[in-house]
Image (cartoon, rainbow, N blue to C red; front, side, top):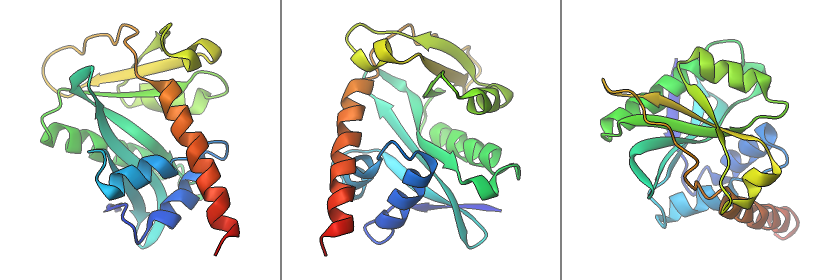
Length: 187
């Protein structure tokens, strides 16, 4: 059975390690630290299969759409895949979102070399749409998709290319990489 444990100061380094294993070229450290310090209302969790950490997941919202919960830093470590933990974790995310009175669930992902994730989200009832926003430079460089799913009895409205601020998220990732580098070499 899958268990969620909120990321805190006590398990932050484990969370960063798991996230960097899942997404080696990215860093969630700043997002996790902001959550731990209470500077955002974002929530991040370690996922446990029995007593062993199997992945990470998060839930957040964006000002532009207070009706939607966004999936953040979601991934299952390779050795735990094909056990339906990803689908179970996604259902827990949707339950948390509904309990917080969000009407829709959304996420974004890169379209390139990501067929497994794209198929996974589609199999779990999410509908993709391309994301392009002239104000968000990152999506002009990479082909991005927004996936959406309704959590209520209304159809989910299209995201319609509203800014999700990927470019500022990349700046946080770069800061997180620098911080992780310093933490590894300064005791």
